[in-house]
Image (cartoon, rainbow, N blue to C red; front, side, top):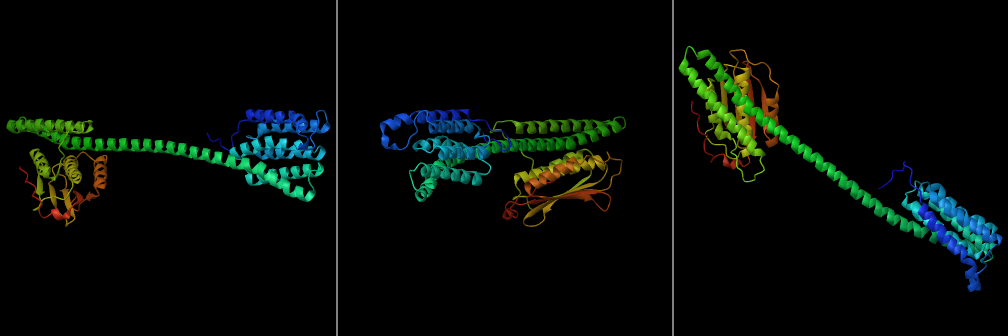
Length: 416
């Protein structure tokens, strides 16, 4: 996991221990190497001051490297600068053992993503180059001009190789972290899409339930009022109203069953979808409750209007008639369906001014549902009061294939 820059990074005791073990092994092997090969150069003897000084430098480097992950900007120059003490006060051929801890420190600092690498790494290279050149010159191995060339070259190897390796590892880690973050983002996006889909389904269900309740239950309420007024004066009309209530109740149950059927997971289940051809039957049901409704149908049919758009139109007519019955009782209504032009079909529901007190202002959910449905199929919805004190709802439906308008069969006329 990528650690934020502000968080304290963990120590690296294992890295320090490893550097200490390797450095100590090389340090203890110096006498053996000098005895086996005298040509190795001026190696310090055990107990000699240079020997103890080199051991102390190696120990300080190993202990300091513990903090390289936590404070690389301070630790790396310190690890690179401590060998200057041994190079100045005790130059010897074993000075190269100080590069062990330095190589590990550069690698760990690069992997830890130090904050100022462009300053720290050149500073470390300069310190290493200076120490190498100082050791060569003071130890008598090379002259000053040669040491000024050899020191920077050796420092470039000591600093450059771990820098390259650390950069590769850091890049791989960053790529892995980026993939993990992308995966988490995708999971969050999928969760958000799922929540949005559930919300849309809930909104669709609420619109369907509202339409069912607004249409059928308002009709049942009107028929119940007829029964109450005529049960003594006109028993036959009251019985007819009771039969209409039974039919409306059955229609409510059928619509609810259809809505529940849409929620089933059976892909083979088929549910009929209300279309513009069902508008005359809808008007006939309203007329049976005593409502006065004029129906104007197109001479040609409505082919080219998709099934979803036809459902939107059907629900708009249903909602508009239910609103008229609830908020403008006694008002005469008109339903007009016709081709506005070659590309669009127009559905208009208009009612006059009420002749009795209505239910008062509604909650606006029916109009909101109309607008959401119209937006879903790319239709234009307009509604508002008319000059005569009534209300009008106008819906323009797009045709999927305008060429079908001329050959479409007519919509059947409603029966009173």
